[in-house]
Length: 538
Image (cartoon, rainbow, N blue to C red):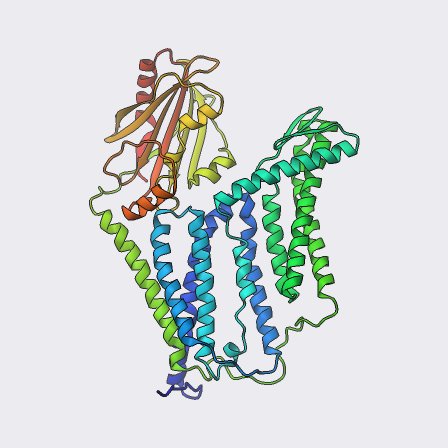
């Protein structure tokens, strides 16, 4: 079988080569865009993984550096690649991509899906580049470019850790940091004791939360050490040494930071600690970066490692010279398969959504004109857990002596799993704050402007008397509006895929009323308020 070559002298042939070269890029471009879009929510909401935004430009820079390094080398005879084995492995990963997309559509916040998608995209990228090299003989820009395995592995450091791994690591780091900070203060003559993730000094207790546990600095140090290992083109053994040294340095600096904050709290009081928190949080990671850089320089030694980024004097053929027809066959097939996987995913869920009613959505307009109305910021931890797209938290008082708090959250379609909001209810939050429930929760339907809103009513004790909580979780498209709290586990996530259930848009409204003497008065007050604040619309 003959392969046809495309020469740059003919404009029609060149146009065909441009089309085929686009096929080489499009499937990989789509896969990486999909992966980055999937991880963007975690990078934006979770401060522990915000360093992920830096991994993409770092990978692009290393690719550019790798290209310059390979162009400076003399052309080498390429060993024959097991093309059939490469294609078979790529087919397996392609089938896996279709399955991953099916699961991701119902569970976009599942971290195991994030890892499966990242590994699949990286595997398809490596195999695609290897297949292109195996089917191209006169395309030096490709044949001389080695598959950047370490550059792609660097991207894995930006993928959020699975919860089953992250929680015990955060717990262990929190206790280790607290113990190290307390011991350091005692050596300096400042009395301190550690209690789990707390550091007790004479002015009070300093808590070590997830952000200060060291997981953020640990994840950043892994990114930095992997980057410098590839940047300096170190041997694999030296990369391991660099990674170990970088992780140890970041954890040690985190203990120093916590000890410094505890020292400030012991000598100047807890109120002085916030003024030192952010400056230390910026300065110490910079020190860790510089230390890692110096260690990388020392490990590199005096060996030449491709710092010269010029492309040499010898002319290499143009981008389209030597591009063969069969080179574009596999990328074209991969692009078609990706399209079929996306189409099949949408058809699976839409086939289960045919019987659902049209979207019915409503919004909330809070009484900002009332005296004492105050909008409060929502805790950052709530945003990380619930992953809502829009949220309002406000308090106000009425002339009747009622004290109100309203929390309105809205989720866009497809942003999180449909069951995520069901996993967190006011019953859990208020019980965690130390309040005791009075009686059992009841469900009541309130008709407001044509909407039949299902509210669950809770009663909790408080210092000023009973507090009544009315909570409504509304799915824009649902046959049954009555909801129950549900724990998210592996079985519920898989059942959502099998049943074709994905998030089609949700919103929740929580009203807390204090000052009502009886449940009947509270119900009438809530019914009256809903008539004033509920509005039709998205």
